Image 1 (cartoon, one colour):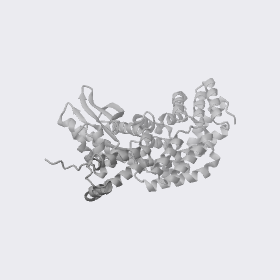
Image 2 (cartoon, one colour; image 1 turned 30 degrees about the vertical axis):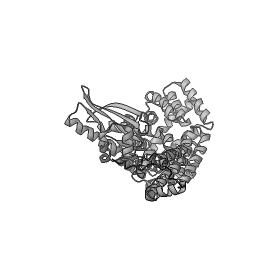
Image 3 (cartoon, rainbow, N blue to C red; image 1 turned 135 degrees about the vertical axis):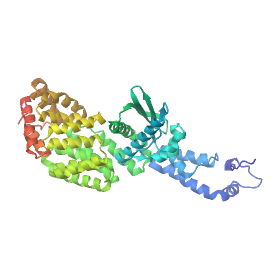
Image 4 (cartoon, helix red, strand yellow; image 1 turned 60 degrees about the vertical axis):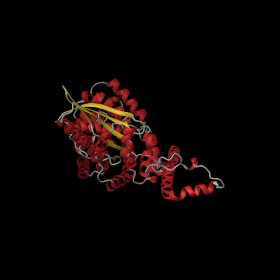
Length: 472
């Protein structure tokens, strides 16, 4: 039987009297369409992302196609070399022991995770549940990645034991088959949505940590924008460093004006600068207003942009608008820890610390790394429960290591009668911000809320700082 694969050009014998150019023309003439298409793919592989390794990979793919004779469709070449940025598929779970009931439960879990991740993270490419089912015939993550064109695969096992229904989930990088994350949980019918939300948040954090390794999948301007964002994220909490973080994020937005994470991070940096310099509120609030409004227009189905909008409207004293924006974020993603915290914070700033605690607890249940400690610290201080506030305030410094947080710890210790510790934290507060004073703290309280109850509760914090020795 004749081998249908054409003999590679470089292996063809050279007939007597025929030049290499003539031989090449004779070989290429019947194959010009295929070669033109594949040359375009190879050129794309050489240039995609502007990355050296992308060029080397493209050269290798071109060599394999035209020299070794192994041809691939153009789309498969690109998918094999550069999976879409932050792309993921949730594949069918193995079920042990197998039963019809647990098979159905496993399908429901995968469908819920797929839908929730797609809804919550607009910056991720999430393969549809129907498409991911096609990968059921293989357990090789590399093959799944090639077939579905994704960088990450999430899968695992659903197992029924004496303790209940146990779900073991893992996240795999399809390029090298490496396990990036895994977790084992028990599914309870009463809180399965919360449990799946916790897994979803943990997986997203793992994907975010892998950003640097994925940048070659992006066009050059987006690569540069991401590099600027990552440089900004590595800047510490010092007051004097915030203008540099702002500069880097503004540069990223000049490269990519609708870059979602740069918009959100710049909003946060501007918020922190307003806390540091409340006298510049109007000047710094204007770009916050522009960023949050642009974000909502560009990505109305992303809960995170509505959260940024709510923060801005609160500083503008538009309480109805702030609650409405937060409620829209909750509608889009009812299990986002940051959005749950924000709802509690809005209640807190309106003078209802007791009602806010439920929301902070819900955020912590989904993500132990959430900022719940920071908010609960302030809520318990405003409730005059300083003994409860102290450990939360000290843990809050690990999440938000800034002068305001140091002041909260100092005030809580002072009101709890721990004056030595209060003075040490007051000294740390002033080291972080030499301009810290009771009048500056009062300005920060007034900046964050015009509600009389919140301002009255804030006087306890000021009194504690006065005991700790903070100057007027």
